[in-house]
Length: 96
Image (tube, rainbow, N blue to C red):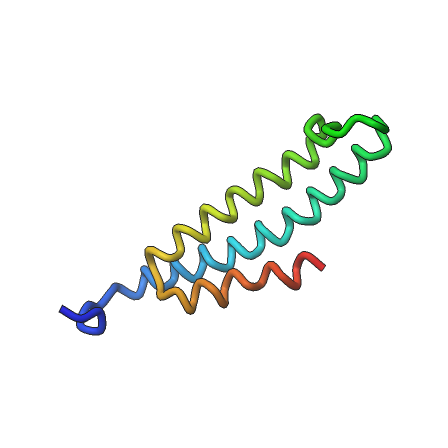
C-alpha cells in the first residue's frame, strides 16, 4: 500500500501545522530568554562557571526550548516533513 493512497483527516493537517508553528515560536523565544538569563548571571557571580543554572530566566528559556522540540517532534506525526520544516523554520528570524 503506497502512502499516496492513505488519506488523513483535514483536522490532522491543522494540528500538525499548529504544532510546527508553535514549535518555531517556542524555540525562537527560548533563545531570547536563555541569552537574557546568561547576561544576568554573568554580572551576578564572576568566576562561577555555572551561575546561569541558578537563574530562573535561563530555566524558562530552557523549558521553552524543550517544549518547542516536543511540539516539533509531534508535528511529524500529523503532516509531511516538508510542512514541519517550513513551519518550524520560523524560529530562525525570531531569534535575531
